[in-house]
Length: 428
Image (cartoon, rainbow, N blue to C red):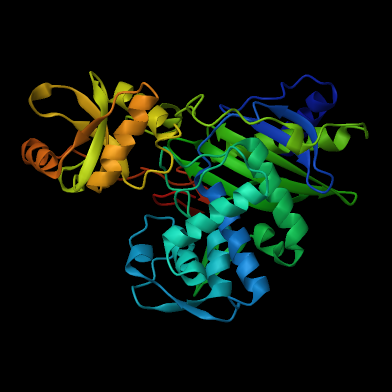
């Protein structure tokens, strides 16, 4: 930010005139070394982490490197699944090979969604096995409000975390793997003659900033876990649900400057913060605030397959989406391994909140559990999906979707050398 604006901001902070929480979502200021909470607002509320997920992806990969199961110089393949991930991505062809070292840099500096899958499959044999390890690590670290569904953070209603949990994860990364700290401060990724800028604008606007990771999908808004060091003291800030890339960087700087100005005092620990029970509330959907199109993406005819379950029919897609997000975060839904979504019913009969690509036994047992929770649930057979699909006109892409569906920094950002770039779609 301009020098005059920064000076004014710091003055307001020192005078206590800036409100603590001005993001759309939760925020948290903490000391990673001591685990102390300096300030927080709704730090235990669920939120969609987007590419902050890649901090846990990196944590698991770092463990594999330490144990010798992976090596930085090791060449690993790009699978078809990795290749089809949406941007931000490196975009290497199926069957090509890259080093673990490059994949890690691409993951943490450029937030490459394809590299998350390349690393996951190399580390654990499959993305599903890797995600199971991510969730096991989150439980071990005490991240009681977190559940991962994929290694890159693309939106899924079951893929959630909290500011508290993300602060625990950031602290664990800095404590357990200091040898990899440089990835979080790297200003750009060199790919041939190209220099892909780090999405973390705070590294360019705050001299003391030295990490860590950005995240964005339409549902989450602009997220950031940031660190900065002054006079040998390192602090961390978690910003969730900011309105833009600039907004999240400014909010993080506000909190960090405020933290450095505060004298030492007895403070609570991160572990003492309480996460809201999973499923008790649904994370805010930031789509209307940060993206140019309606928040609910409807299922296409080619999506519907296998057995499924319906959680009821609703007049609007937004109401159906709210019901779906609540059902997916219930004890019965968070571990279901199908695809959730909203189906436009034929003949203008409304919109169904549903899940598909299940087997028959899973669909039937899921509805039994939902009924025990007094929640609506109906089993849908494959032939019913086939009939719906035959009558279902595929929805047209929403306005603006081709340009900016989901990606970090939909606005322009400066790359090294001053050149401006417009990031493409995808969780970053």
